Image 1 (tube, rainbow, N blue to C red):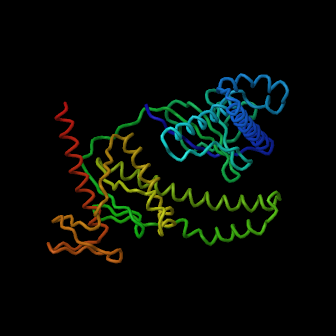
Image 2 (tube, helix red, strand yellow):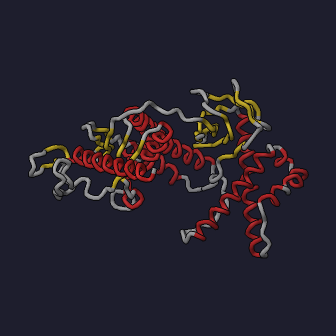
Length: 370
């Protein structure tokens, strides 16, 4: 069984928006109070478990009508979310990583709450316990069994995210293979010569972003409604860019998985590449999210994504495998063996060759073990 999330837009009326916002405020206050209790307990060397905090909820609801107005399992899930954050912190400490102690959540840093088991029903409208029946735009059918529902606020809009458990549908066997060379000039170049253009969504939206950021900067009173509206406008521009990029990546990852049985890609250190002079361009092109989409879609469809060593993929000749050093300005691969093709096309062919060799080695290894 696999997990998938279906995200649908909600259209609450004014009263429902107020209840949704009130639920977020209560959950945020509970999260911060739980974190404060854990900090104080640690100072006194008296550890507090998540179940100890959950058992306090009935007493809190007896004296707080606003807390009692929130579905019980939503409150419990808030404390479990805090416990997961705490356990992840200690896990990072034990592994010697940068720890990052759990933070208190401000009003703009807590934007979701979850119904973990019950309290919701999906029909013509979405029924939420203690909130009401909310209009929902269900643009596609939900496949699988719904496990949880997370209600999320993004840039002033509300969304329902259904986490489902389903049985992936395996695609028929496909013997075609493809190599992918991701880049900045073109989003990707395939080993069959096809070039996927880089739309540079962030760069195209920079004029709008500059105007929106200036509007926020002019509103110097951080508690004013005008500053809040300016921030909301800025968030909407960023959300539009993110949605454009995500839509583009979903479509191309779907096409590649549908048409090819083996997909070879470079095992890039994207985090390192995004820390240099090309950071803005690397973040704009979104290699990491695209490769993640490609990987999970291929796994669910029974396809194979092979990650190969990225060293010298743009310097090696796909025909004779000789290394021919080229600067970034050279966009054509010319080799002494007589091969003359585009630099990115040559790199994609090299990636495909390495992927096929690695796939053959893995198949021989498993055959030997069996």
